[in-house]
Structures are given as C-alpha cells and as structure tokens.
Amino acid sequence: MKYLCVPCGYVYDPELGDPDSGIEPGTAFEDIPDDWVCPICGVGKDMFEPTE
Figure: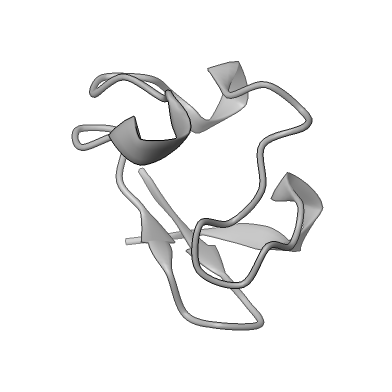
C-alpha cells in the first residue's frame, strides 16, 4: 500500500522508503516516526491517505 500526500501529491512507497529523511526502503508507513514530514511540502503523516 502506498500513501498519498493530499496537499502536494507526493506518494510514499514503502518499497522505496525516504532515504533522504532516514527512512530505509521496506519501512511500512505505520512504522515511520510520528515526527516525519512530507519531503516535498513538509506536512505531517496525518495529511496522507492510502492509495493504490
């Protein structure tokens, strides 16, 4: 399952992670620290929703 940042359209893909923010590939969205923010627009995890 991927997660879409509603404000900017960034898609978090667990297979890719977010290495620039210290999130290793293979990290489930639920396992990302709560203080992580979108690498594009800076909003919190609460602004993401599941997407295909």
